[in-house]
Structures are given as C-alpha cells and as structure tokens.
Length: 345
Ligand code: MRU
Image (cartoon, rainbow, N blue to C red; front, side):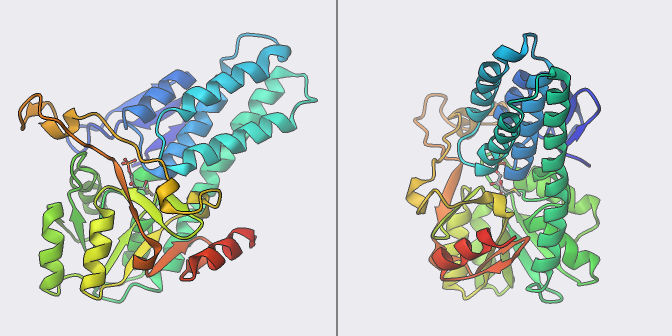
C-alpha cells in the first residue's frame, strides 16, 4: 500500500486518518489540496511529507495561470503555503528547497511548459531517491538486528511514512526478508494512534509478527526482558545528534538506557539539519487540544479541560546508540560524525 503516488495529472494520497477501518484516497490536483492533506495528516511521516510537498510544488506550477514574468512570485506563495503545514519534520523544508533551487536554475528558460515538466521531474526524483534510500537504510540497519530479536518501535516509520519501504520499519522489513525470526512490539502512540492504526496494520499486511501495546507498558516489558532493541524514526536530527521524533520517543530512550537496551534511530540524511545546533532549537508542533479530549470524535475528557498537546519530543544524543542512515550507521561523537557523513557522497 502506497502513501502517495503520482497519477500523471494528480497526486493520489492514501487518507491515513481513516486507516485501518477504511482504505480511501484523495486525488489532489492543486497545491492547496496537498497542503490541506499534510495539515490534516492524511499524509504524514517526515519523508512522505517531503515528497508530497514536492509534488504539491509541481502542481502549483502546473496550475499557474499567468505568464513567465509572474511565475517566481507565484511559486514563492505556493512554497509559503506548503511550508506552513507542519513545522517539525525538516524533510518538508528540505524537499521544498530542492524544488525552489530547481526553479531558480531555470531562470533563463522562457518556455513555461518546459519549466513545469522539469519541476515535475524533480518531484519524481525526490520520490525515487526516497525509495532507494530507504532500501539502503534497511540493508544497513539489518546488521544490528540479532536473529530472534524482540524489537520495540514507536509511531509509524514505515512504508506509510515514506514513499516506499520505510525507515525504522525498513530495517525491520529487511531483517524479516533476510530470514531473521524477529518480533515487533508496536506502541499504540497516543494521541493520534499511528502505532495502533498504521504500524500494526502495515506489519500484519506483510506477515511480520507484531504485538500491540499501550505506550505506558513499554517500561514493564523492558523490565521483564522482553525487548532486545528499540528502533524508531526521526523528524529532525540536530547537528549534535539530538533527535526530534513522535512524542513519547524520549521516554522510551530513557527507559532503554535504564535497562541497558540499544536505542537506534533510522532516518535518511535528508532528516539531518546541520543548521540546527541542538534539540532545543527544533520547532515542536502543538496540535489541536481535541486530539486529547476526544478519541476520534468520542469525548473522553471534560469538554473544556485545558490541554497541552506537543506532537514531538527531543531525545538527547547521549541516549542514542546509533543513527542508521543510507550512508552508514553514525555513532557518538555525533557533532563530528554527522558532519562527516553529510559531506560524504
Ligand atoms: O505526526 P507524524 O505521524 O507525521 O509523525 C511521524 C513520526 O514521528 C515518524 O516517526 C517520523 O516522521 C519518521 S517517518 C519515517
């Protein structure tokens, strides 16, 4: 099942808010629709958000009604709208910058149709890169997965969060495909339930053994010796290795350290943001309070109770055993080693 797919004239987006009950799609034909789908989390997960935004940018150019002269100003508006959808995952800004750079390179091209086709091609390249990179992350990460490992994961860093294959679930998928008898514990991941709704669904579809647990059960499982390894994805990795990921990740990292369990991040290098020195500088999205007052429209708390609903937290680098990327596994000292991997081609 694909999170997103270019149809030739629209972006077909799997509506992940409806999973696993209903499999339905939105066919976005305008950049505004793509922005709405990202905002509503119909498409979510850092790499998928980046690829969707790139196609959104291309749709902006395809739908541009004016002449060559006004194109740049119009596309700046398109970029602004797509940029304001979600603040934490850096892949969104990374992909939009790639699209912006491509447009600027074409400043001498006067043929609007040629520009449109080149921008669409760049969005296709971003999607294709993500497919390739995730397979590499899977192959690289497979090396640290022991046979018969019980792996804990949080949120969904799978095929549904990327263009294909996944990052944390890409490692798990590669280990499973390589014949290792692994088993996954999936945190349900309150409040949006990406673990229950998406990870459990995705792994079951691939016949990878999975057991669902509530978020507050992870410590007890570790204490019982039921977890060998934690692997999660990332939304933004700072230059010093501090990593933003779905809220609850930090608690898992603390628990893993207390129990001597390896804690790995799996992410493409496009998630590394060297412009951000440390985790305290990463913008953390706060979402609608009703996500905590209700469970999918059913009230579960006093209607007007004050709510704090940060969607991400930051795991300090010192709690991370290694960061699995398409260029290899990065370990401490992160300030030195992340820089090295970013300059390596
Ligand atoms: O709010 P979401 O569902 O977009 O959050 C997703 C995560 O936190 C993922 O772990 C992260 O984006 C990595 S996806 C490969």
